[in-house]
Image (cartoon, rainbow, N blue to C red; front, side):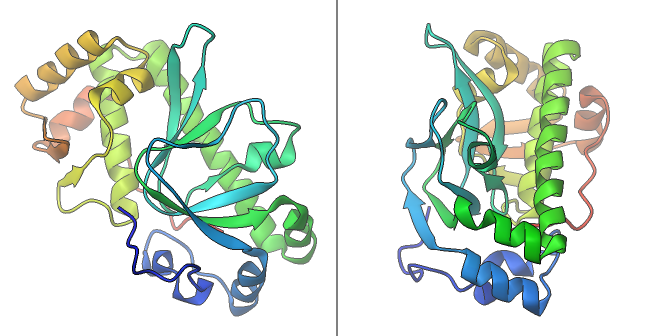
Length: 249
């Protein structure tokens, strides 16, 4: 949950994400620019879609705290969750650079966002090549995650893709300080997981029970625990390595 005692706008120099070892630090000049680039900080309540498919977006956002997810809807109401946005992730870049959003983004928990105006994006590219590279890296990373997601849905078996997605989300959360030892309180439900995996809720539930029976994981009352990481990684087709120090804006 978002802490209501936090100041309305967090100074970039005091950003809590800067202490994370998985994230690269800014130079003093970069930090000063990002502070001027940031125009606002907003809180989105859980369940709100703050970016919508088919709309044009005037801002891009960095997730400061909370979880969100990117998704697409079919006309009959079926939903495909594409991936998840965690603290330090950039969202809205597609709608800022293209004519309109090709997907929607919904807050899974209450989410605090740093707001950056699209009209100033050129200043970043023209004056700070290092930050421009960071934005390009973040876009490439998002593409990589979608590649892995497509591979999981297209080629992995139900239990393999379930193990892979759960392990990937755990590692990503661990990198930004959301996991404790081998456990984490995942904010999503089995329905969210089913919509991520491209499986029915019943199939997802049965597949999770197979993971429980294998002694790899436990998931109760939204608290997810890795019991045997080697076993989970073997089922997933390989462990998920932490990223090298990565950028954020």
